[in-house]
Image (cartoon, rainbow, N blue to C red; front, side, top):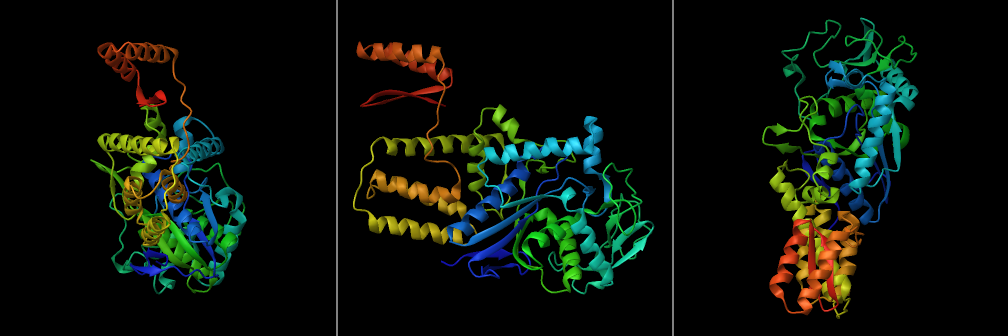
Length: 464
């Protein structure tokens, strides 16, 4: 099957045809580094990672760009609320620069633990202020911006199809009930391109510009950086569904105003929320779960990745501790089954079967990233007695280039001395055929978080 994606812009599945044959340009909205990434954020980055792996699996070269927002993102996408970076600095009594550095490093640690491949280009907003100013000049020169009250605004009335991504009607857009009306705006949907007299308190991060000393609005960052590295038109833009109505809508308006109103991005892909009982996870509420918390509770980060792979990226994923426990056990069981295959590699004449599984796998992943079906196929393949263990391991290795679960990596487990001593006592009891005592030692080992497995080669100890 040819590669097909659901395009938010057209609201249908489309065959993927890159602008340049055999090469794709992809931009992903990255983190705002004012706090830890929560597991809902990380689900989106896992989706991005699966997308890039599927593109590469199809033999397409990829130029993947992701930004690091370290300036200018307000607590509301629509020029409302407190600046997130400034809020983080006040919360921790640090400078905004210190906050950005600390949480950027934390983010990269999280994606490493989740085996998320880094994009080819990572770019910080603060390193690309000149690119933003240059794009804003183009927008102003093209008659789509105005200066009022000390700030440069984007004039959405100049864009005939503003809101096309989210199917918005501009006349229906209203100010938020809790938001002070910005008297400088000509239209409700207008937004700031460059702040010089901010409504949201003073800023440590400021730069000179044609409109005065200040800092950029959030929406311009992605437009300027993506165009810098991928050109005026490129193939794929990704993000969470919360970006559709404001952030990505405003990105399209700015970019197409700057480049002459020609199509900017060909395919828009968006990941759904990870939700809990009280709704989607949000940092603004102060109640969110981090990957570190999962690790502190004893979960392998890749068990969380396994949980995310079990739901299609365009479907909400309900998180609960019961679901996390189930995913953790499922991941351990899968690794154990593969570990057993590695102990005795047998080869059967399974070329036809091998081709069957590889073709079905390609069909699933190429159908808008149907990873849950591909994961189910892996389980079916492992149970197939018409394939030898060698063939099963080869196919698993191929599948895991997309899954990213490190299924064939053996874990080095540090086994405590007291567990080793109990294992020795159990083995001695078994040799003496004292199975009651042997079972007692097995239970004691399990209470310490380890499991004894018996085979013809003797007993092995694995961490639960």
